[in-house]
Every structure is written in structure tokens, then in C-alpha cells.
Image (cartoon, rainbow, N blue to C red; front, side, top):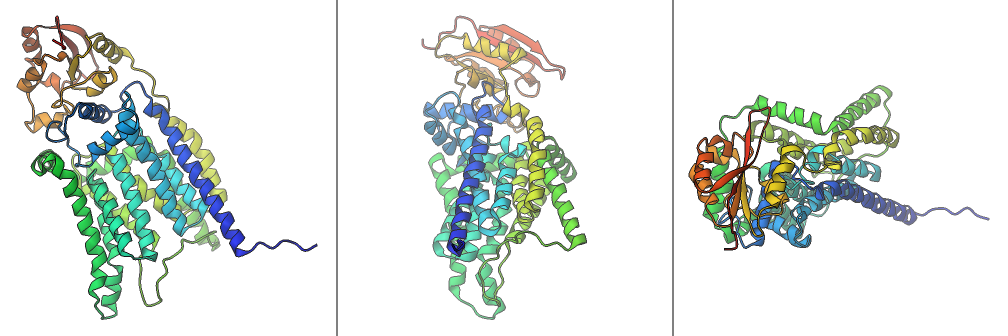
Length: 507
């Protein structure tokens, strides 16, 4: 009898099988956690209702920017439309894009980490981002941040591949993924700096060696031009002028005075409210670093460096992840205004990469995993158990559902109209307060929309939106509307549902 000795190929095969199992587990967890939000019978955020209403308008032929107001970058609503088609155009299918994005982020974070560190650390990073509360809130409810993060995760994975194989094809796909991310939402702009560092590595090494090869600039040039082309090509069908006006001029008009301290407080408070697991991972990572320093113990596995010659320099995966995280924090703190809680999700992806690349041993990771379960159950409760509409929201939806077949409604909370199974007008898919503040709609626009034959109800929910027009009620009543439901909130919102008497939307 001779003992069986495992060969290197056997060991590699076992490692690949383990990676595949871990990948499937991470993707499955990410998908299952998002199913309750996908099937939720109520809208979960204001944006969830806005973007779902936009998709419903596109079903009837409305075009983004030309017909449908959109403050997002040009690729987002077409992606949401494709997701809706994949979901067979049910009431909830506008959220398909969100769920796919959450699973894709998890998969590509794992794929990126598996190239440069252990499979356990890769699983750790994938689960950190896949179960993150900040990420869940933009990949359960529909939001542009979700698909933008997914494209960013793809880009980072490709950048790590490029470090080992700096091919023209890889640079092309890097440009496509970064262009797609920024053409969906600009929150991941710092990734451009990270990509430039990787793509210009050959040129920098040539310069250090006092040699110049024009081909060393071909890859970064191709990548940059490709990213620009993605934006231009995704804008042309809707009109470059309209895209620029709504996606960029509108953002400048609403930016106001920047307040870095306020933004920093929002980042910290949002991470505290939604991502205690991430804070736990940070504490465990710091504890492991201190333990290593005291005991001189080496980690179980170090990230694999790219294959370059001794004389050449290449940025390490750790450097790239840390740089991305630091630049994102600076960008959100100083460059973004106004900043919403959804934007904080941009911090989580690079943070998860950093934590995984500096991951402690498996025993420490097991402790984090066990401690995370109750934290996730608490912090994700609203997404895991969304429940139905209650109180005045339930009453509003019931009133809307009682309208004649084919009726439309307008509301300053468009999710209520969507979940009642109704359409809203193309112009009022997004009735946000910023549009009022920038003069993009006013009382006359609301009244004009209410006068349309198909519109049978007007829902006023916020004193900052439709409720900011004191004469709206009298104008609607003079047009034949009656008050069908009233309520009020502690914050002073005087809420009403106006229904058009004898409304006949089909003529």
C-alpha cells in the first residue's frame, strides 16, 4: 500500500471547485436576500416609485429625456426598460434591473478578489458587499446607483486582469465597463483615476527606463475613447441637448453651496444606520492588524501580485482598492451636492475590497459571519419584511384602484400610483422638490396635467412638492375634482386625494 500523494494539478482542481462553490453560494445569498424587496407590494423609496413610473411610461412609448424627465445619466432608463422586458412586464418587473445588479456586484467582487487572494477572503468580500445595507437599498428598490456599481465591479475585475495581461482587448472592455458605469450614474467617477493608474503603468515604466514606445499609450487611449463613446452613443437616441440639460445642467442648478462636513456626517450616519456589519468588519480588521503587529504572525495568504519584471513597477491590488476607497470618500465629501443616502453605496464596494484584501484568518472570519446574522436581520428588516401599505398610504392606493379602467393619476409620491397599477403622465414621473426649486415645473403644470382626459386623480402627499402650491386645491375643485381622502402627518403635511367627478378616461 502506498499513500496517494496529491499532485499540484489536484490541488488546483480542488481550489477551482471550492471557488465555484463559494461563488454560487455568494450569488445565491445575494439573490435570495433581494427577493422580498422585489415582490414588495409597496414602493420602498421615493426613487423606487419614480423610476418604476418611468419604466411604465416607456412601455407606452415614452422616450427618456424627450418625453420622460430623467435626472440620471442616459444609460439608466434603457437598462431599466430591458430589465422590465426580462421580467415579462409585470407590476414588479421594473425592479429586475436592481436585483440583477445586486447579484452582479457580488459575482464580480468575488471574481476580482479570487484572482489575487484566497477563496475565503474572496467570499468574505463578496458577502460584505452582497449583504451590505447601503448596497441592498439600491439593488432591491430600483435606483441608478445599483447598475452603476455593477459596472464598476466589472471594471475593477478587468483592471486586475489587465495587470497580468495588458492587451488591447482588455483595455477596450475596461473602457466599455467604466463608460457604462458613468453613463448610468457618475458616483463612481474616482474609478477613472484608478483605471488610469493601471492603464498607464507600461508608459510610466517606459519613462522610468528612459525609453518611449508610442504603443504604450494606445491601450489607455482606446479605453478612454471607448468610455466617451459609450456616453455619446447612449445619449444620441434621446438628443444630446436634452440629456445634457436634465442630467448635467439640472445637477449644477441643484448643487447649491457645498458642505463637506454635512456630507461626511451623512456618510457616517448612513453607514451606521445601514451597515453595522461593515463597521464590525473594520473593527475585526484593525484588531487583526494589531494582533499581527504584537505577535509577528503572518497572514494565511497574501494577495498575489501581478507578473512583472523586477525592474518594472505595477500597482498592487491593495493599492488600487485603497486608492479607490480614499478617492470615493473625498469625492462624496467634497464633490457631490446634494448628497443622498443612496450615494453612500459607492463607498461600500471599494471598502469591501480593502477589507477582503486585508482579511484576517478563517477563524476570525467565522466570528464576523456569526455576529453578522443578527445585525443583518435587524438592519435589513424593512427590506426582508417590507409588508403592505398601511394607514393613509393604504387608503390612497385603495382610492386609486377604484378609479375607472384606463384612468391615470398624478402624485408627488409616484410610487403610490405605480403600486395601484396606474400610469402617471410622462412629465410627472419625477415630481421631486428639486424640479420645483429649479423652475422646471409649477402650479400651472400640475393643473394642466390634471386637465388631461385620462387623468382622474391628483394625490398630494408632501408640503414640499404639490403641497407647496396653496391654490392647487381650489384650482382642482373648480375643474370638477372632489376631495376623496384626507390625512395629515406630524411633520405638517396636509395630504389629500382629489378625484375627478364623472371621469371617463376612455372617452
